[in-house]
Length: 386
Picture 1 (cartoon, rainbow, N blue to C red):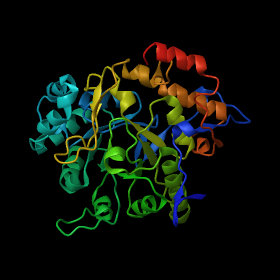
Picture 2: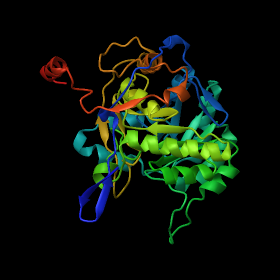
Picture 3: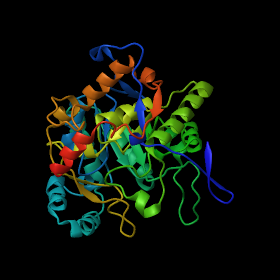
């Protein structure tokens, strides 16, 4: 349904996580018996959680910890880990900077070129721990780094930018050929980000193994403010899930979609999957782990941009171990810990045995879902300075 926003101009209503709720099922299931696995190409994960390719979130140590807990940490090949021999020391400088100089410092620290030998070294470190290895880069570096990563043993290659399309027009440089790249790579290629049915369909037709959904919803991303672009995550996920299912019926090939950003609690993650996602990519929640390199800080991948930063450094604090954030026991009541437990409990409550069944959950538009009857909780949190 479209609404007129002015003379001869219509706009479609779009929805975010705070505006919807999931309806309990007619049948319930034991949460311990639900299947939460996610498959991307030949990579199978026990839980549908990916940690964002942000330098304050994922380094080799964190990727190993994430892998041992059943998820997947994506390492940014354009960042600190491939520019410096001792990346944690450099990240500490960013974490210790004052807010007014943080972005400028990030820009300065990202100026030294990537050392290609470090790409292979980081991948080998992760693979040595016997966990899946996923790495990420921008389209401009994909052809060069993809070959290095593949030879070093990476299991999954992610090509990520603020907005990705198959048809990119440029006269001053050669556009990245997604279809050719997917055919060349011998490992699954995940591409992002997108938010529309048409673009998702074209990317699937180009041969991608997975899609990242979301433009600008992340806590450390400022694209929506700087560029004014974006679609709320529930609507973006529903539209791209429709593209996935349409393409699947037509081609027989299932391409999982992964909602990327905008989820701060277990409830948000449950809503993303109910909206049609096969998995989620999360940054802030994992940046709060003791194992994260950012020491309670993280910043968007576009923050280092020399002319137009579309990310910022934010402080999220350290609230617990990665295991507590994923599996509990939860020591906080805000939904930011035991994310897997929240997903399993939600699946049991709505009667979904697996992720595909959860994607058929009844959804209601419920703008009062977070405030209805919660006046005392709100007053208490204000009084505590939250």
